[in-house]
Length: 112
Image (cartoon, rainbow, N blue to C red; front, top):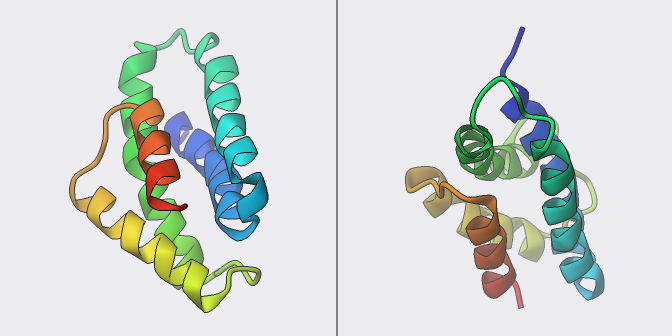
């Protein structure tokens, strides 16, 4: 059995990358991340939700980068959008955030 934080980060990654690609809808996709996590976290009973959230926040940038430079890249990101993902994900991998809210706000601020 794997870590459920991977599953959450995997789902959130879809919203984030669609938000990168569809800039007019970016705020909606980032809000969908908040809604998804808020709905999920109330069912986290096997550990403190904050502990899981920390792992999700650490995994998300790695999954973003994997969908740009990994074996299964998303086809819809332009080269400029791919570079924007790399520019944000790299530093976040090296210095992970503990809270999704802060991470998503940082993404919103860096992607005008």
